[in-house]
Length: 66
Image 1 (cartoon, rainbow, N blue to C red):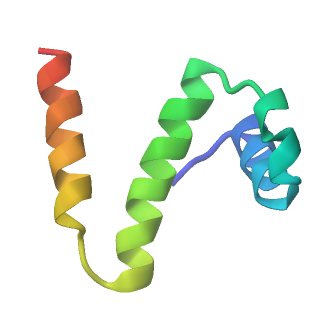
Image 2 (cartoon, rainbow, N blue to C red):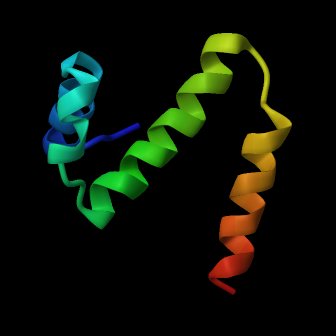
């Protein structure tokens, strides 16, 4: 999976930053979409199964764009 350098930097910053300052970072629409795909792929990979809620949210997003 390809992830842009900018998205990785933002995710890294969010992971390591103090939550009191988390509201300072602004994600571009592209970074949000890219991070979403990354996390929705990573979570099932780590736990070994798909969450029903993630499947449901993916379906909602697909129907929203139709």
